[in-house]
Image (cartoon, rainbow, N blue to C red):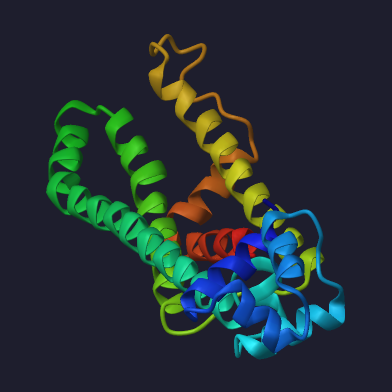
Length: 226
């Protein structure tokens, strides 16, 4: 049975109409209605409009089983649930990062001053704080979408913003990796402290201004939201 036939049969039963009664209102034979519902034939466009009028609905409901308003309502509800889920997930990540920051900040600095153990300090400064700020931005934008529809309609603008945000994050991760590698190597004098010359000022500027990670967070959100 084709989709249109299923929809006609469903609408007819919802209105408690027999095939004969529907045929009479449409000025066709009962066999014509039966052939539509079984998928042997399909009504033309004028007949579809008449069917929609008889059932007091629009032609989309006859064709697809749901109206434009119903589809729009379901789409909005799906988007709202997605924004709620993203807000909770990224908010939990940001909150976890903040709790970790408050719990281990003093202990990490104590390790550094007592044992000159720099690896935890680097991991904490280079990864935890930026991740916390990035997650906060995504959670905030997801929360705003629960109030209004925030999106970029132009595909090229959205892709450009997404590309720039990803490029920023990849560049930072590469720089952070190059910055961290010497910290894991044994202090032999030959390799200790050797880092590419561009890495140090780039990393220092970013970690001393973690609010900059709000920008890629907002950019990733806008770039991925269609």
